[in-house]
Every structure is written in C-alpha cells, then in structure tokens.
Length: 96
Image 1: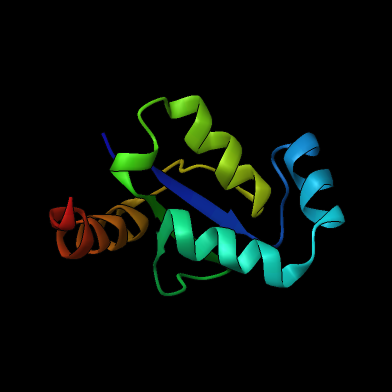
Image 2: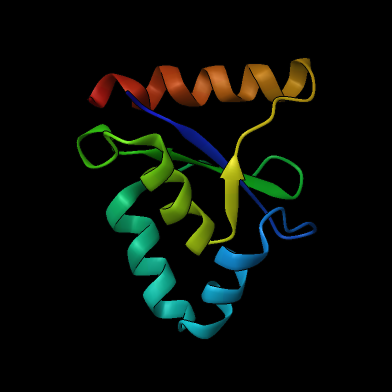
C-alpha cells in the first residue's frame, strides 16, 4: 500500500509533528524525506510525498514520518490537483 502526503509551507495541519520538525535540523529532515519518500515537483505552494511501500505497512507510521517533514495525508481539492497527483503516481507508483 502506497500513501501520498502533501507538504505545504503556508499551513500546518498537525502541531506535534511540526513541533518535532522544528527541533530537528533541516539537513536531517531532508535525509528522512529522501530515505522514506519520493518527492514530486511543486504544484502551487505544495509538493507531494509518495511513501515507499516497503516501509509503510501501517498507514499511521507513514503519517507520522510525513508529519516530521511538515506533511499530512493529501486532500484533493480539485481537478488540477487530482490530475497532477494521477500523473505523479503513474510515473512513480509503478516502482513498487
């Protein structure tokens, strides 16, 4: 099971993981992001993180890890965002 998460700098959905991310160096967070996620290009003020399936058997673990880098489970708000995510998944989800 893959999960896709949204990272938006303008808003913060979760207070605990964001607080943790403020205590960890930016370099460490980038290493976590690269190790556990595939990152999309930007759409508006957001990027999307696709979890690596072998590491996230439990969705709550994936959410916690994504929260460390400022993300949350993606909420699709329109056709443009949906099409962007579909394209991203068609390119990268087949790697699993």
